Image (cartoon, rainbow, N blue to C red):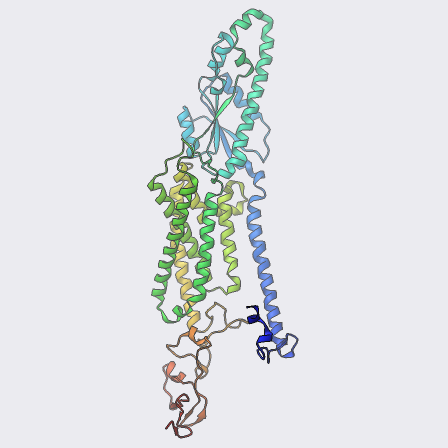
Length: 520
């Protein structure tokens, strides 16, 4: 079997071929080397663009944690709440720690929970009656549950990565520190108060469990999204859909040149809109099934129920994300040469990926553009559908619809440019422009002499590049002998008349008016 590929069994097959050292190839080799060096420069730009966009968004996020605000909700209004609030506000903060603020507009626990769900990253609730319950335990030996004093509110559905890295750790650390410090201060106060109280009376009236552990807390996630796939679900789902789409778009670009030569502009636009919409619906449907299968409908008793409406919301949101990006990328792919196709892909994929991983509040100012990218808006809508956290879906839906309309207009313009360049012989089937080393098109250049044109109206440009495309037979004219095409003259192509009449010989049937042979 390997002998099939051996040159020893193919005598003469390598005859006539040149070595790279041959002087006849020297000029061509130099051109190729220059083109490869150009590719290296382009690849360098693309690599550094991608790395800079990604690392630039996340490398300083720990120093910008102060941009995230967490709130204290005082529902007690007593000594405990005053001391706890003062202790937290006195904690020395650095740029790598979240900013504490006091919200005085909340009057109930349900209001605090709703406020964090809609607006906040998290908060600490000093529950109503904390001071009174602790005082009764210390002076009347009443039963006391220290965990009812404080409640930590989290909202993992807002941005799971930022919640895990910063919000949850800050809330738990600060609250634990306050609980310990409050217990120490209370023990010191209790020791000082024993000078005027007998030991027996003190023991009878004091709940020592409350004395040693006056404060502790419980944690409530108001928008739970703590299933294992939560940090990566949307980013890798969208990324997979986008990468599959890029491959299809490149294939369409490289294999549809004949459409731009033969099909009307309006039909081209409608065709691409329809194909891209269908592709977006298909790949997003797969993503919706994957979320349903691997997320698990009942991962938390506090989570929103996963209904049929939830499925369709995720499906159509994902389709809108893929559609907007496909329209955007294809508008670039239409007229870019092959060696530049990766540049818009990288500049599109990286910011979108970062927007779904990192919180925009933790990124440099430049990355506020993430508010406009499809991944961010689509993931925010889906996180809201799943958890109900931070409802900005009206704005997110508006941004996605606006992007789809804008990208559709851009694609129509790109199709017009692509068709114009194709019909005028400016670019070839693969997208190389005239003057490039790799350019090859059978479409006559619109500035060239019509008499030198080789492609005729109605010829298939892809067929003309094929090795099966036959060369024109020799012929004669009434004005003299010459080698002419077998089809109509180029004068007829451009709508002009010529006094020269072409008479073609039929070499296959041995008929020639030049020699007088009639094939009989």
